[in-house]
Image 1 (cartoon, rainbow, N blue to C red):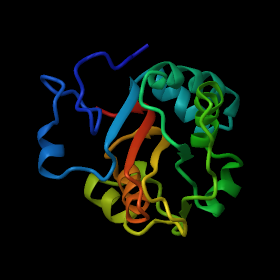
Image 2 (cartoon, rainbow, N blue to C red; image 1 turned 30 degrees about the horizontal axis):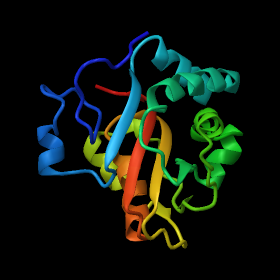
Image 3 (cartoon, rainbow, N blue to C red; image 1 turned 30 degrees about the vertical axis):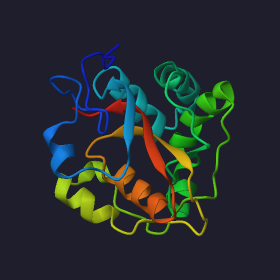
Image 4 (cartoon, rainbow, N blue to C red; image 1 turned 45 degrees about the vertical axis):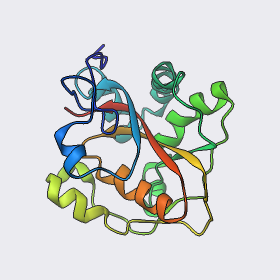
Length: 192
């Protein structure tokens, strides 16, 4: 299994020489504060995620969620977990939110509540996998909203893959605008 074992940037989970902030995060820090990733987004994890998301093999997700739990079990406990939301049209098309399926294991085992209505996706964005990094950032602009006061909250956003970090950045920025003190990202795999 392609576990991420090398020294990583604590913000974006990309390999960093000394485990400190990478140059990209020093120059353009993402809105999220810390990232925890279990695997490099490569075979066989990549194939398992693709099968779960696009081939309807959602039964893989509890096992993948267990693998994510092993990585995040020692991280600081948030007030609650938010699975990265899908737009209602995308949710209807897919039938499930893979981020929610991944988040359930950690929430249950770590006794952390999941919030499904705190963060909403307002725009049915283009699939990020089809876009360049610059297009990904533009695609996610204003994609999320919340109407809740999150003052002082520590929140974790769960997603399956972090590629450019654009989706997680946009979601974290929205939560911080609503007052969140700290937003972390827990992802199953990190594209390197």
